[in-house]
Length: 341
Picture 1 (spheres, helix red, strand yellow):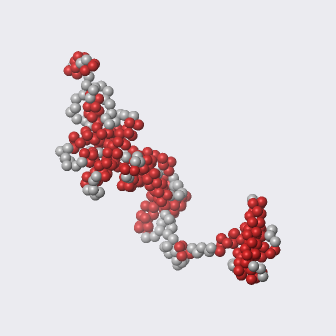
Picture 2: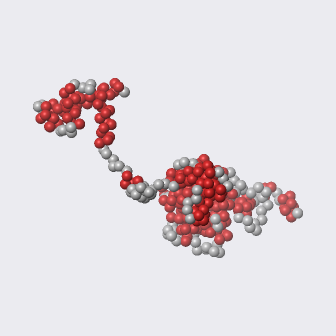
Picture 3: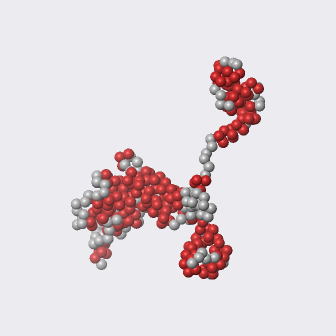
């Protein structure tokens, strides 16, 4: 009744302009704050930080103001969960990130205050990681794992970010986060996709194989594994085949059974002359279009590896003449190659 009477007797022009801000602080941080405004407005990021400071003041009075926001991570969560448009929430996050980086620069790395502000930056920018991870939903990997990997990229970006360069942090951090996720898929995800049911069954087959090996003192047969799991032998074979895609063969480990060294020792060395064979075959059909004398000069120069001085002595001409003949031969080869192309 008191609230109804107050609303009916109060004239519209005497309504306090600061009521929406008080109601917003009350909505983000529950407490004994009375407000009669029916439509609260969302609080900006800086007001959320100030409200957090009042809650944590008795515990961290000596810590800088923004570091106190880390003592209450719900400040960031309340800012993200506030009933405001997505664009306003992103602006609040950017404003809070800018303030936190300003405080982080003034703190000594490794100190508790530095770690708390750094943790607040991570919490405030986790939506950026979730946004980047959502681009990889089609990879059939648990989204929690992708977010964790992206968070590693976020931490690396926070440690390397310099606010004085005039670049927004999301612009700087997004390539690092996406790069970390792509590196995870490149290094850890299987090239051959195994269906989820086959993967789960493979785990059971692997466990049953270990149990039966211990019980029998030998490697169990496919039929024994199938009987243990009450599945068909073809399913067991499919699981074993799928399990091979989870393991890479070592190039250095010795091969079992044949007594030969590892695969790395079996690899042949690279012979540069093999490239020359291909190149010579490509130009062989062009050489027949040259005069016999020019063919001989090219063969002596590039097949017999003679110098121009040696060729001049071989043919009884000057070195300058050999150089001119080589240049003319190259021009004819280029013209013939363009015509064929």
